[in-house]
Image 1 (cartoon, helix red, strand yellow):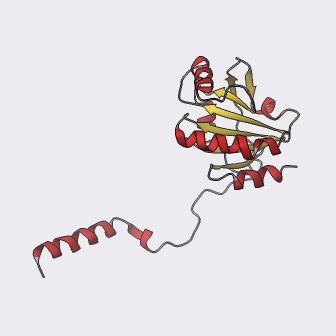
Image 2 (tube, rainbow, N blue to C red):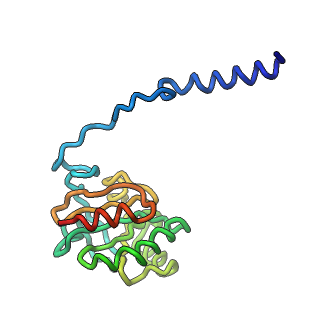
Image 3 (cartoon, helix red, strand yellow):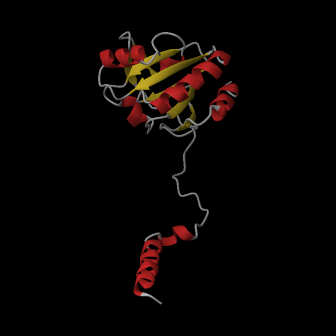
Length: 180
């Protein structure tokens, strides 16, 4: 056996050794148990309290975001092409089916209400179905453990019904359809 082949095999073994027990997963769910109704970002928990301004300088809170509606959707955007594809899909194929749900775009990157407003205008999301929130102090990002593309749904009682990355809108549509 050549020395380069031995070196290659040793490298593969070293890499595999670093995987620990991940090569043979147990199938055990090691996420912490969530108590329904407790406060937090996980599905079935009471959404964390928050207070952020929209681009009209109106304060939006957990309770006001769902007031008089079945619920609210929060999409965390960086105004990138991927986010634009998600938001365009949401606007075209989901939002119009749920007039009793508020839709929010959470801008957590521009750092000011003015910046969020300018980003909404320049990306074609000013007015219309979405209200843009300026998460200047990262209250929403931190409260919902969110990042780019995270989509959160809370119901009229403030319970988290969805907290996951947006894919094709199927899961979001199903969750919104099931809101009481």
